[in-house]
Length: 391
Image 1 (tube, helix red, strand yellow):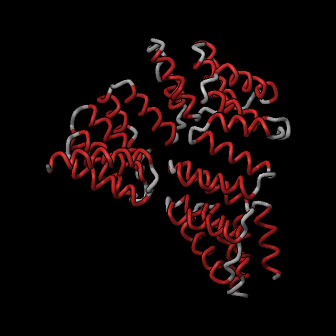
Image 2: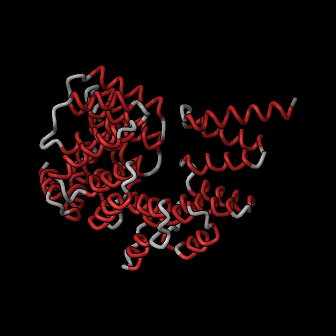
Image 3: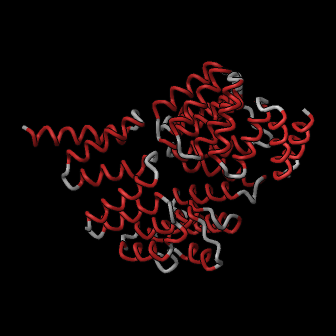
């Protein structure tokens, strides 16, 4: 295994090119060396060659299936490929191989959050709590899941029961978020201020200080903290969004969108920030301008499903339903595994009284994510309308 040891050393030191050569040499020498395969796959994933990385991990698992860490890494790779159903299966397999494997629970919990699958999220979180009630990381994840599905009181109780991690930053910060979502902005503010003392340059803490002050209607303080978060992380899309929303609602429309424009003027344009910028223009109901900006920045958004979703919203605002529908169909054609455009298309059909089409679309969504509450509610409403029409 002389090449494998050298490859691991090169991989750990950040020399990806050398590590790749050595992994390949090891596999040329011992083609069925599953450890070299899975590590080579991990390297491929880290260099964004996701399909190749997933293939190597699968080959490793074909030879030695009882590797929970490899199933977990495969799940992460598949998630990056937007193959969410396959990713879920991989994370579940990791847990079945090692039922106290917290990293796989964590990845699966975050994936369910991303998908908005509250039922499976809560089932998994309660399973984790039952299996590992004395594991602080597991209980922290349970609290985050409770907070996500709206059980804010339970999240507060869970976070408050845990020993502070290190200087208490992460746990105290999450407790502040739970208080804020529970409608207790003053207690949230106290948590964030405590974390701020030891983490004055943490953009997330500054952002949430802005949120708490905004909840308390402290407009100037909120704007100040959002700006500080942006100063530290100029691409912090949520801070840009919340700042611009705050300015708009408080009547300061002269400065609306200025933080985005300042960032774009530097030539540093990221897709999440650009999408957030367009969303804010749509929020202001200036649909024509939003459409113009989408066209101007199209080269940065090429291949993005979100581009077509936002384009559809612009056309909907301009009452051009046919163009809105076509935009969503383009988005779905780009990546059929993403739920958002399918759900958006079903809602658009429903709003335009095309109930049969809406029901067909929403049933497809429910086939993929059966517990998605928004889809369930829309399906019921569609079925009621169809029944009325048919009777």
